[in-house]
Image (cartoon, rainbow, N blue to C red; front, side):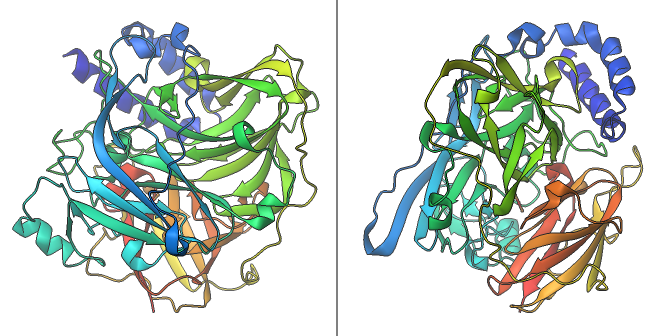
Length: 524
Ligand code: C2O
Ligand code: CU
């Protein structure tokens, strides 16, 4: 009974999101006042729960072998228990090596990695390297299932679906081969099982994949403990601290969610690197924060509170798939699900002893808090914010006046209509190819969307040429793999410079993607 009411409550919050985005805080505030009695029943959401656990830094995975010019890694996909909220029992997660986020994989540009995954979960899995320029076989096409190790083989339905995939069915294990032939960048790997990506990522199947190179090494950027990946997510917890998600079937055998809402599943608690509202002690020095929004559906407007004197405290040095040519200073920056922003923050700009909170400006009160940085000591610092970063290593983009080669319209329709999430008014079909670009070409794509759609392409990177016919925003600079399209139109220059073969593009609002907002690309 209590649990049901809470589910309804969550979707009530979801329904306000469209209004909350441009800053309609009055609406959010009145909802909050209305919700206060119920909120008190949520232990993890109590304001006093904030900033009581230290920020975990995911361990860097050690290769099992480095011979033959290839680094080999092994990961087990397995259930684990970890303390996500400060009070009460640990939370059961599904993690790579049993932890959420999974271990960080660090690679060098041009040096191949083979990551062998073992599926010790009770359901099929698929691994996608988000932002990777990988072959179609290693891309994690949504029906390239890895069946559980315990399975004897596929049932009829599973086998039939997998025949429409790229790499075929595997039982127990699959080795994903990544060439890493791309500039230094913050990528991430996560589950991509057809129709179940939302619940499987929500349970914890996500980790960082960092590409390093000589261009980045030559810069005076922060290193070691001052180079921090931040995986930002939102989750909702039941009384026993288990993760709440509205799956039709908690065993994740039948797809679907019990409640339809336009904006996808939004949690009430911010979880950073697998811990609710963590804190982190820092030196008064320059830090690199590699922020990845791994939430299912929630966009965040990041800001620092208090801001540094003079403002501009969030210094963007990298986009989704690489360093910018020069840094850009921001007071706030919006990050939608799937996107990454590589940021520098100079904690010497505040007085030692200051506590600086990274916040979500779309929310108020504890729901706005992400992670608190406690500036605990003065320190020496060799790092500097470079004036120039990396040369643009992609093909030169076409002129923004060029007419589009393709048009894609992402819609979920009005709230409450129960419409599926569609691209060009069609749901995903494994058999239908929706775009057949030629390898080596750069296409202009016109993408329009109603509310809350992070549009993501596999295998190809793009630049944003325009937004609503106007020049792109400063945060649109650089090469990207995901772009937030929210009641607007964007024009993209998509470079098909990687590999031939079949892959997908889709909405990274994971509930939308699972519900049909996905399409096929075949690079020929
Ligand atoms: Cu990060 Cu197709 O996804
Ligand atoms: Cu969407």
